[in-house]
Amino acid sequence: MRQIKITKYEGNTHYSVYVIDSFGKSHHIGYESMLDNTILAKIEQKACDIWANEQAPCPKQELEARAIKEMIDIDIENGITPSLD
Image (cartoon, rainbow, N blue to C red):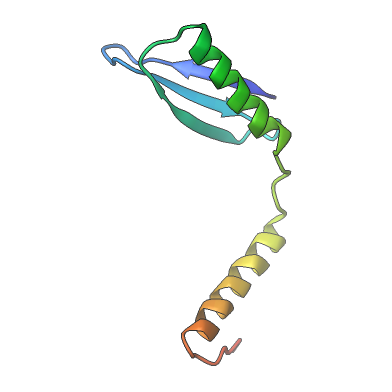
């Protein structure tokens, strides 16, 4: 469900702006001190950019495999022979 959320807590001077993509991932795009038409247009453009480039979340196994590969790559870069034992 795509959404733009603009919130302001009581007593704060700035609004917090979030964009929610169709997969439910929240993207904090910044703070605004005022909300005029120019600012709202910029927020809408940022939201459209996020929505145009959103990606489905990776399955758990793919995330784990990617993390293991990154750790092995770090070991290789540091001159350590990788071991999967």
